[in-house]
Length: 96
Picture 1: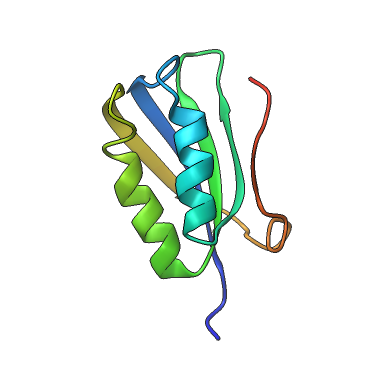
Picture 2: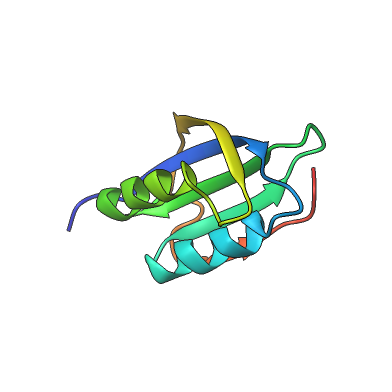
């Protein structure tokens, strides 16, 4: 089995108030990913995805479109350590 991949994602655009977090939880859980999603006080949505590389890539691709009411301008990604998240499930966190 391949080592899990971890990615921190910042999504900018019209991404708050459009069910982006709930959509992310649903999609990431459906892909079997671990991690979390939250709104940021700057108006962006931040998420960390951990799991098989193919599933992480699929989720990043989905973030470029988002839910129907969203308008995604940019998706910024940076690698992160997936270890602490593996096996934790995917959840929504409070705004930071």
